[in-house]
Length: 144
Image (cartoon, rainbow, N blue to C red; front, top):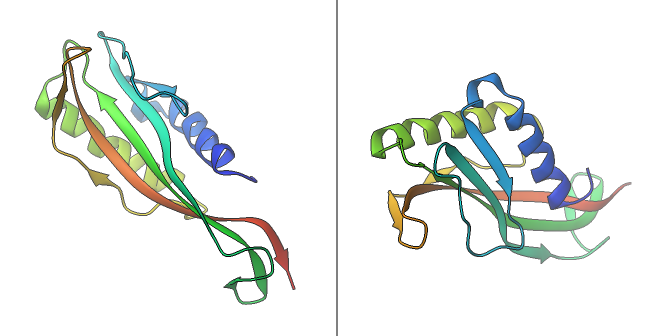
């Protein structure tokens, strides 16, 4: 994998195929601010935010003997409840999603997720909660 998009798209592919998450539809929304989720199912809108670069190639030692550009980003997954899911069901689904992401993250890119309070989106008439992860990864890694 060589970019944040590859990392996140790989995660979305893994989660979409996960039997424990078959009731959730995943949408990539990297360029969108407003979402119009499906009203008949749980919908997870995945977005990358606050992409930052620390240091530069051969300027920062990431691990012993390894140099590269270190990037960090915020991954925000907004889980919409649809017409038939209320607060308790939304919370259970989001905790299940957080646990499955922890299991799928074999490379250790994602920190422990933070879950927001329940929110109401007036434009779509949907309730949602957000699951936020901080991601750190090395791009253009060089091993010395």
